[in-house]
Amino acid sequence: MKKLVLFSMAAVLSFTMGAQMQTPQPSPSSMMEQMVGLTKVEVAYSRPSMRGRTIFGDLVPYGKMWRTGANKNTTVSFSDDVTIDGQSLKAGTYAVFTKPGESTWDVYFYSDTENWGTPQNWDESKVAAKTTVQVYPIEMPIETFTISIDDLSDNGANLGMMWEKAYVGVNFQVPTDEKATKSIETAMAGPSAGDYYSAASYYFDSGKDIAKAKTWIEKAVEMNPKAYWVIRKQSLIYAKMGDTKSAIAAAKKSLAAAEDAGNMDYVKMNKDSLKEWGAL
Image (cartoon, rainbow, N blue to C red):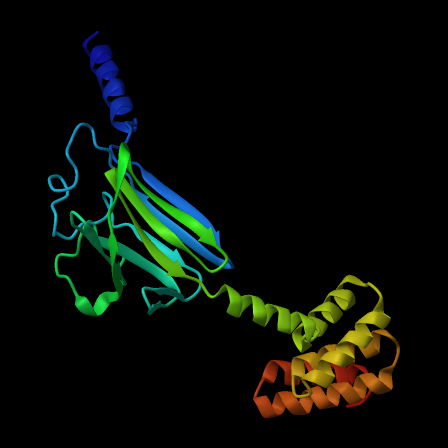
């Protein structure tokens, strides 16, 4: 009987130790993704709530650096270079630190994103951009700290932060016109050598219209005459069409270009094909 009781206690203890307790987080994490023009913007942060507390000037003191949220530092990512207050901010991920004041906030974009709270040793060289923004009062209190992307346009938006009865917004500009113009010019100029090569390769590998593959690969070779991998594909397309003479000529060109580039894999592949086609 004693052994049975001990066994039962051990089983209960084992179950208790193995179970994972789940409780809601006081400052739950949040992820946000927004396209601004042609630029992807992502924000990751934790969201504390007021819970009857006075926030700015008390829980978050004026004039002191704040992590801008809770837990691990808040981060914002830009897929392209952007402009903040006349400063160029390279594409990448930044920690967002702020120094709240009664009428203005200082906002810092910090290159070190691996901090739990504010950095122990602040490094000015890691401040990629800094700006000062105005505080706008809100009539209705915002219970939970919220980051938003507001006032969207093709060329920019505001990175908004609101809590209690305060809102601040950091304006950033994105390179939409530059990217759109480049895209239009590229498209209007017609397919690139890589486009023709990819299309020809797909048709060749999939057993589709080999005549179209031939037309496209010839355009690719014409646009990039030293690309041995493109000429190699041309030789294989000619061989598949039964034009061994042209296949051999293309393989020899690819072989010479591959030897000049020092790519021994393509040297071997071309030699193997030339041997197969009776040219070696």
